Image (cartoon, rainbow, N blue to C red):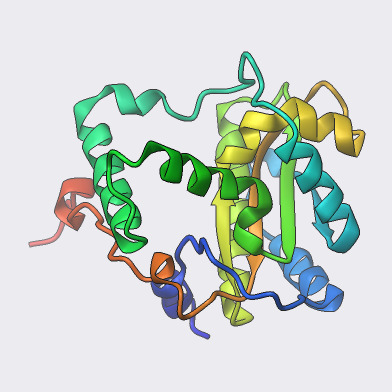
Length: 220
């Protein structure tokens, strides 16, 4: 698959097939992703990748737990600004519209949100963590590594769902996996084979026009 095709067809999948992913495929992806760029070659990213019984055990722990209070980091702050809140509303309306859940059906929306805890049925979950001493530049590096992984997964014909939702349960996850307390549990990535029949995997995704995001200087 060409890189452009992987970028164009990558989307957050919220319904996966019950189909295993071979270890050799996961190792190949992770080995290739090591070449992602990072400032000063710090390579700040670390991960734990689970499937089978270890994944089920973690999911059972999460289902019996509550989100961290307080959270270790805030991923929702831009929602206080209307420009960004409108983008959130648009994707929410499209997603819940695809599965037939109305805005006032709070219990059904909450149940769907809790499906994050089982990664929407994905057979593999990558959990990304790194030392809390890492600053904004290193968070950016981690993002480039995560995007590299997601595109490599797409190149293997599979799909992903990046899950900042997992960061809401960071302390529980770190305790369960024995990760250092001075690490940040940043996010998860669900990995597997998309359910092509699931409507939640096909709703249109809005993106801002290119000219709103980029200025081109120096061309006639």
